[in-house]
Image (cartoon, rainbow, N blue to C red; front, side):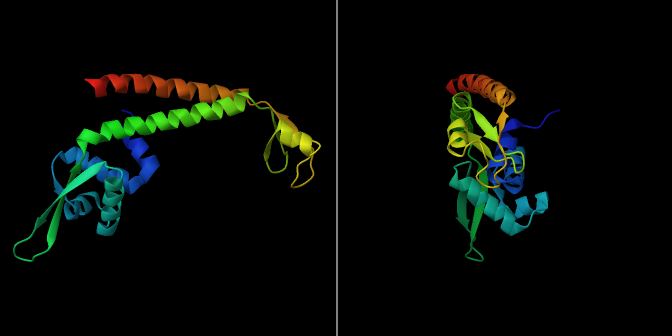
Length: 173
């Protein structure tokens, strides 16, 4: 069975520890103390707290604070912010889609030339300005066929657009 795309996105955006913490909270589906998360996941308590605050900063989790009567210390009970998580991830995915579309427009509206030595990439205008020589090493620039890259971008855009259509139906219901 494949990995959960939402958790993969969380890992890419916030790191593996944040993913593990969120995954644990999703599995428990109840309020959980940070010490329990650390104990059950094997993560250090400081790393769990760092991940929780990062997720809190992006409204993916929330907490309830209760004062311990015997010690006077506050105890924090954490849970996934289910009301917001899908909407937040949907918005982030839309932002990624817009960036991919902008990159595709850039790739489609430019010709590129590449240095054979270090792989530096230049637009046609930049190549002309440098007489088709690499400004770093002086090597002659090679024309780059970016059609494969454009095709990869188009496929990724189509996948995300389809995901967004499905998710919009879920969010609106």
